[in-house]
Image (cartoon, rainbow, N blue to C red):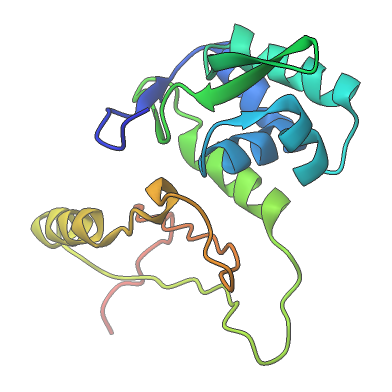
Length: 176
C-alpha cells in the first residue's frame, strides 16, 4: 500500500458501523503502521484470535481492510492484512463526520499525565468568510502526515491530533 494513495471516502453505513466499534477503531490505528497478521493483532491489542477474527471480518466486509498476502508456516497458512487506504475522509453528504471523529478521539484518549504535553484546548475566532477560507487552507498544509510513517520509533509514543475548524454556533452580541 503506497503512501501516495487517495483517502478512502467513508459514506456507507457499513463503513460507520465498522469504525464505530472501539476495538475495530484501534485495529485500524494499528494497521496504519504496517500490515499485520492475526497473531500480531491479537498480541498487540491483547485480545483473542476469535475476537480479532470477527472484527477483521467486519472491517473486510466494509471494504476497509484487505488481505495483503499469505505465507505457509508450520503446516498452515498465515494471512497478513492491510488497510485499503491509510487515510479516510467523509463523504460531504454524510453530515456526521465531525461528531464521528470527536467520538473516536474521545474513545482513544488516555488520561493526562503530569509533566507530559497532553492537553485539549478550545479556541473561538471571529472571522469573515475570506479569513475563514484562508485559515482552513493554512490548516490543511500544516496537518502532519505522521500516520504514514513506517512505524513507531523505539522511544515514540502515539499522540492524536483532533483539529476541527468549524463555524461555531455562538450568537453575536450587538455592539455597545
